[in-house]
Image 1 (cartoon, rainbow over the protein chains, first blue to last red):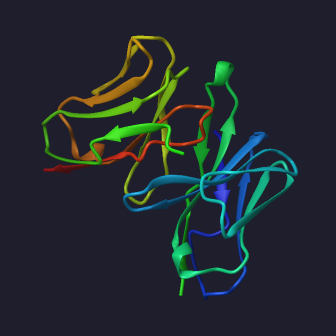
Image 2 (spheres, chains in turn yellow, orange):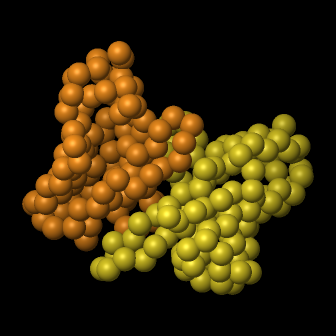
Length: 115
Length: 107
């Protein structure tokens, strides 16, 4: 079974702090994603990565950056946390399939509260 | 941007009633996936549809892919309390999930 782990289930930080959210997958997947999920807004893509040291902006990258130094690890960085970044953050790892039939495997999520 | 639209956003049913959620796209999709997220959990892959007009069943769940490959539906027959959660459709390659339909079931 694919296993995607996230460093924390719950995190509380203060406004202005630099925040690191870590995601690790154990299936040698090339593709990894960071989403945030807010009530009524569904899953919104922040950043994704197709390979080590490669990153692409998603729909809402402002206020975030990412790092992919190793294939199994994809980090989301909040350079200066703000209260509007309070959210559930979900990491996903993607298993490539035939003809674009890619399946995403999600981690358990990190619920971040910024005070 | 948003690639697919899901309706309804919320659905509350009595246990035993049927439930359907719809996923619509303005463009032709190569395939569509469905995910389920239980309350407090994370999205989990349910199924993938690839062929025009395809119908797949998983126990009480029936998934359909439209003939034009622009829409899909998930139908649950005789809902149970274990069906509660949010159901998302996802067109692979677009990296954008539908907003989801949240189902609640009254015992």
